[in-house]
Length: 345
Image 1 (tube, rainbow, N blue to C red):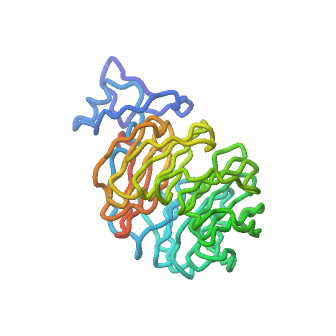
Image 2: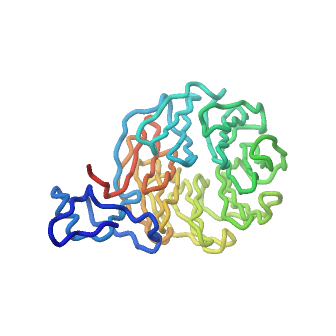
Image 3: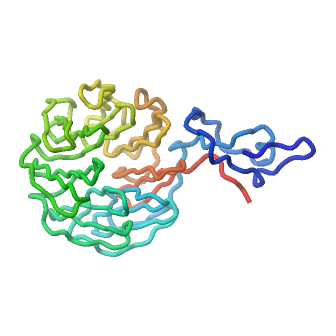
């Protein structure tokens, strides 16, 4: 990072970022928006570091045609989202602007996942899986894969990906989503969400409040029993063995042992918890159907209500790196959170 010279004030726009610095070693503190005198801010700073991470949000307006149910980040500033009008939308500038790719699927798009190497997949209400090998620019229909509507997907690494459908089945691919094997009925009811926790460990949830866990990259599953107090709609992995999930009864549950056991944190949200995302550095966010965003800075242990943010219920969230997060609601709006500090020119 550039230093403030004694002989004169260096403008913030002249500062250099030390890209080799270990930024993870610095805690996140919200010190509010930059003051009007931007160079005055520079006088007292040695390091310019994003301390926002999902704290402040900007409405990008009505982006899609239908409600937004799915989002995914593909790296290199590229993000995709899917709506209930079968359209896929794509951004190449970290979610700042979006391009409509048109009608892609045969029914509502419910879920998306990135598998690395430019490969992305999505699932719809018509039992189809669609696959892209060019970072979401074009899509191929793999046909009917599931037995019913697909609501959950997760990438487990090494080309292994899983999906769950409304007939309680889990499907597994070992070739980056090109072909699929039906593992049969795994869950107690509709499979709503999935997450990968590392070390071959994956979890999934259903509408009968159960959590299921795999320790062999999704090949076999164990029922952990009734964990939540209502249908589980959202999950996120926060690293270090810590996972969180949210249910329709507004509770958040937390695990610190890779999903083996869970603690009920009680009622956190104002409405049904529909989406969660991990933003790094211990910061997690969740959205509910009461338009609120909740934020944790201690790996999901405690939560702060940021108030009503969205224009409708929050159906999807994604973290795009560099302090940038996005969310979508059922009023077709995309909201974006960026770093608290930027380099002004």
